[in-house]
Image (cartoon, rainbow, N blue to C red):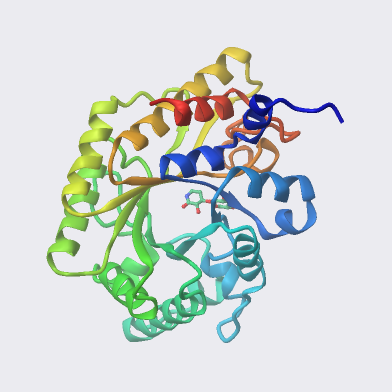
Length: 332
Ligand code: XIL
């Protein structure tokens, strides 16, 4: 082996994780249990570069509840165990969402009381199991429509009514009083009807003493993302004034295929800018990317013809976006 100078050794040990820890923020990635277990390169890169993991699908209702009477915690446990072994935190995603619900649930007509029982039992069981091991939960996901009102076509809204939101936060808090509880949504980072709706909802929850600690900005972007940093900062600030934290929860920047070098550079700029805005805001504490590498991204399935959305490519090589994040973390 060629011997390294001290400077080379320091340069080689620079990772997103080490730099983020120096800056006092968390840098995360959403992961799948199978990839962590079966692909050493994937698992190694995750532990090297990140200090917080989000369960991409392992804690969704349909994954945890294959039948009404049975829970399957296999994947969820395996991710939490991997995180603990590598000294990483976990964001639990997500307790209440209208998507990825099991057929046994949605195919039957339940009374409001029955649905309240089902949701209560689900939240208490899941949050209690990981008490002390999951530091933050996306308690309610995507409850608002684009006008910023509670979406009427939401499964839980239809079956329970608007108070499903506060009940979910209360139950999660009962099950783990130390967990940080988040409302998570998309297109809510700037100023506009959606983020105003989020603000109004969380203001009301805070004012009524409902245990909520933060708001997640999903940030599934494409190259046209061009919000003014001032607007995002103003939105972060009004949430900070309520005592709420913000996490970037599902960052990716999709590109129409095939991608060009210029597009990868433009993508890098967006990754870096969003991290920069987060680093400047006192209440933005965590930046999570929705997938490790372009071969494990949801984008090609949900946006046919699009891809290349992540910071590592199909062969786990860092892309310009990776270096943009490193540079941003090194900036003073
Ligand atoms: C996506 C996953 O990445 C896919 O694997 C799955 O098939 C569908 O859900 N907003 C969310 C995430 O809150 O849970 C979604 O994740 C992406 C959009």
